Image (cartoon, rainbow, N blue to C red; front, side, top):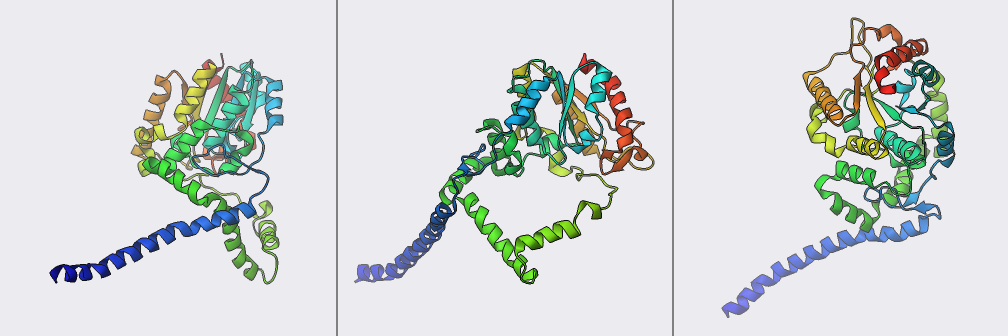
Length: 354
């Protein structure tokens, strides 16, 4: 009788456990139905990502072969790489005359560090540029080790079919020790593909209501042209990127999770010189911008790391010629200040161009 009673007592517990297990399995399996929707919505332009550990296949823009061909034809000896901070400082043609070397500038406003890496790799090192002797990377503070994650669609035209080094760094930076598990789950549930069509659907719904019957795209276009048009934006007296703080300034903890080692590996493989120039952020009226103790330690470690490996490091911080009056907005120099900066740059870093 006791055995019978025990079995009867366990029956509700087993039923509860079975119900819980069923619920878990249904929860895990339900999103798999979205794979069928993804198949319907997939397009013929979908291609495997160049960072497959980071994202699923999607429609990609082709590598810019025309741009690559132009660089091969130019066959420069030195190249300046960066975003608008580099573009507002260096006049490549003027620098060419100052150093008596062929120099071109490959800088696009708003481009992140991964774009600079792909530029160095695919437009220079792997692009049959026989005269190439060196490249100069302009950056802000901790940008070389803190700026890794990026919208990969912005990198399409600079990326080849597969970018293993970038794939490894992006996955490790975002996912850490769980990178492999996350990648498996993403492949199983195709979350990237689902987000590509579900997110616009969810966002456009409220836009349609707010637009009073207007199509969401028309409303967005009106906002961009009538509210946020370039002619309606004012200059800003602040740095373009926020200053690094906290864990971002722990150089030793971040360097091997960044693209900095990959920059040096590319230069090693190509046998070219590589220089990293830290731009001065927007100064104060009474002098250069302040630096925390953590930032100073970070810059010292960054300089040691680069120079110990035989590469060049330069720092614009505290340059007495870069006063607030030479800046136009953000971290950008005024157009009339770029010529004098280029000349000072050529004199200050003459040894790099010899």
